[in-house]
Image (tube, rainbow, N blue to C red; front, side, top):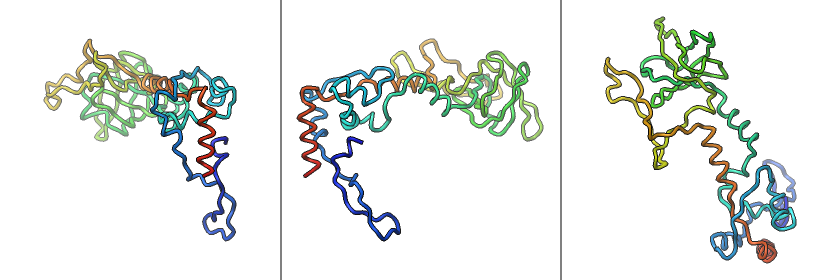
Amino acid sequence: MQYFSEFQTLLYSFGDEVDPVVFQDISRYADVVDQIKDNLLFYNFHTIQEGFRPDQVSLQLYGTPLYYWTFYILNDDLREQGWPLTRPELEAYTKKIFPNTVIHTRDKITDKFKVGQVVTGNFSGASGTIIRRNLNFGQIVVKGSVSFTSTGEQIQSVNSNGVTENITAISSAPEYQSTSHYINESGQQVDLGIDSDATSPTFQGLLAPGAQLTERTFEEVYLNVNESLRSIKIIKPSLIGTLISSYKKAMRE
């Protein structure tokens, strides 16, 4: 990688090896870029276009693909979270980390439909095992991709005592498209919460979201984070040559 080309080498013995090997000293660091990363005189903002790789952006801005590493030095978010994904890549990623199915209900589930129970849809006949619950949102997470009827299906389960339990699903969706949280009209994240009388025999279930609350799915959350990574600081093209020379000099010293 071009970033490591100026790193000096040293002799290093790995593990129990007797003979040392030549190894680049990756612990070396020069703070040349850090000194100017917050100085408006040295950088502009740039929006990464869909599908552009770091080397392509470097070529677009500087006429060479070799200065891509400066983007990571200059932008903490890129270094910590990575380069923004394309839409197909992001969709594949969210499906991978949220591979299950979520049933949403407003019925009381504090004392039923517990983790480990098998649920079955009375209309669809689909079934699966509960692996997680979110009581605040009335969510039951079922392992894997299960095709319940999307709305209004009666869901049934038999608990460890042999008692049949029932709820009505107001929706069923892939986990990545299910509710992550709600935001109010000020853009602040809020929890729906459960009724203060949740332990009462007269409890009617989960409080419905108000008109001023907006749902945010996991897919939308990851999309927003991904889009935020597209706006980056870049060293001004007129100064990139000078800064690269200073960086190389500092690394050699």
